[in-house]
Structures are given as C-alpha cells and as structure tokens.
Length: 440
Image 1 (cartoon, helix red, strand yellow):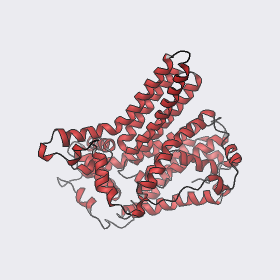
Image 2 (cartoon, rainbow, N blue to C red):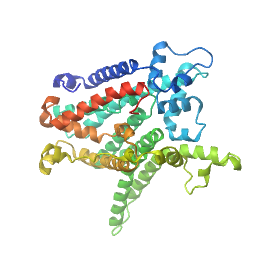
Image 3 (cartoon, rainbow, N blue to C red):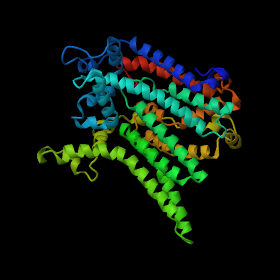
Image 4 (cartoon, rainbow, N blue to C red):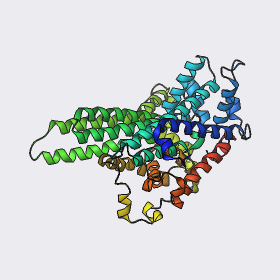
C-alpha cells in the first residue's frame, strides 16, 4: 500500500486514500468471514437471534455483524439496543452506544433487535474510520511549512495510510468506539492547531471560537473513550501560559484580552470534562438518587462517586495479572536510526513553526497515555487506544518520507519491521477476533 509512485497519490490523494481504505477493509473482512464460526463463545449467536422470528437486515449484513460482534462489541450492541442496565455496562462508551442505538432504530425501525444495532455499529465504525483517515491527511498538511510541496503531500498521504492499516485492525470496523474516538479526536486536534495559527496571526476572535469548538470535539470523543480526557491537557498548558503572561503584565497593566483568553480556555476544558462527567452524572442519579436506600450502590458513598472508576477497579484492574502491564519502553529514535540529535532536528525542519508547536503539544496527552499504559492499562488495548493519536503516525511517516523517498524499500530496517508488523498483526488479529479468540 505504501510502495506507490509519487504521481499516483499526489494527483488525487483523497481518492487514492479511499481506494486503499476500501481494499484494506475488504481484505480484513474476508479474513474475518472465513474464520471458524461461531468460535468458542456463542454469546453473539444468542444475543442476535430475532425476537419476532424475522430479521430486518440482509443475509450479508447479518453474517458480517455476527462475525464482528465479539468481545466488548457485545456490550456496545446490547447497551445501544436497550440502554445500560447493569453497572459494568457504564464502562463502555456511552456516547458511541447512544449513536448506534439511534442509527439502528432510524435504519430498521423502532422495534429492532441487538443484531440491527450491531449492524449500525459496523456502519458507523467503518464510516468514522474512513473520515478519520481523511481528517488525518488534512491535519498532516496543516502542520507543514509548504503544504503543496511533494514532501509535505507525501508525508500527509503516508500518515493517513498508516492510520488505515493501524494495528487496531478489526476493532476499527467492529461495533467498538475506537473509530468514532479517532475521528473526533483528530477533528479536535485539527481545530486546536488551527487556533494556534489564528493566535499567531493575531485573529483573536477566530482563535477563541476554534478553541471552544475543539473542546467540544474532544468532549464528544471522551463520551466514546475516557482517555479523551487527556486532550484537556492542551488547554491546561495554555491556561498556565496565559496566566504567567498576565502575571508578568500586571507590573504594567491587566489586559482584558488575556483574561478573555483564559475564560475561553477554561470553557473548552470544561467541555472536555463534561464528556466524562455527564454520563457518570446520569449513572449517579440512577443508582444513588432515584434508587431506594437499601438498593443504592456501594460506590455512592465514595468521596468521588464515580461509577466508571468503581467498575474499572472492581471488574478489571484487580483481576489482571502482573504481566498485563509489562510493555517494552520506547527506544529513542535517534538511537535506532543512528543519527545525532542535530540531524534529528534537521529532519523535521520542513514543518511550520505552528506545526512544530502543535506537534510538541500533541505529544503531551500521548506521552501521558504511554505512561498510563505502562502502569495500569492492559497490553491488549494499547494498540486500540493509540489508534486515535496522530503523533506516532507522523513519526513513522517522517521516517518513510525522509529524503523525499516515499518507497518503503528506501527506509531503514526498523521502519520496515514496524510497517510489516502492523500489517501482519492486523491480519492475524482479524482471523482471531472473528473466531472469538485473543487478541481482543
């Protein structure tokens, strides 16, 4: 997919990305459909039986949905169909479950089953993945000094292509929240980078509007996956910088523009937090306020009555083995490539000043996520949650396009191994996932 002539992907990159995306999805879905059925777990078969004896979907969609409704996708489809009933169901993206439930009823009528909701989830996940590929392409051009240059266009194209073949694999096609999270998170990053451009250009009104809208996008992403909260660190960084600037200016005078800047940043941060707080507020009312005193949940009396924190600690983290948290630390790229720090800096000198600033800031939530992965996340979800962050795609694409070479054959051995691993892992995972086997 990456060994392409420059003319092919530069002439009409979005069409090329769409064709590559469809080809890759067909390959993964063929692997999934030819895997052993139903696998060792028959949960999907039991849940997707029609309650009235008839299906509202075609045979092809029914087979596809059955193959892709595995592991946590069963929770997403079930919650989307009838809402969250049990406490552990609140740990699964409330926003995504709501969307697939609404779309399922819109497409197949109000009286639909879990299978139709799962079909809606498959449609949303694949559409969201394609859109996130195209948004990442635009983001990658946005951070370049000269977006129309061959190097910048190749970098953007390959970054988006790498997201297509993400090791998250079939999770980006199944009724999971990863694709929707990636789309909303990429949109948030794009709007935030645009706000940095507006800030440098002195367009304060445009900057503030973009900050608010980016906060809204991050907040919606957080309703799909809780790690969307980490994107709020971008606004925390800006608030600290703005406050330090105001403190320096207080020696002379207090500027209203600085105070307005902080108000908009705080509002954006609150929008991000709302993506996590609002679903938990609904759960708190259901289990702690509306419930009879003798039926109230134990976590209602906690200092921070968070159903998400309680479910995670009770159902997942305390049952994980010590080996669940062991991940190899990332080897510095300057060591693997055999380059000095100075040459490493020159390798990125084609990025615009705003692009460099945005990339550094985007690194903060991804770095925190990596640290959390080392101490608390299960290894099996690392590839999934990392699919919604652009920086590692950009790092790998910069290695592939170094020296304007867009052919994988011209890359270092380390880069080849990474790309080949991504393809092989996604293909193997597709067969195992559809058969209800790990990795999941």
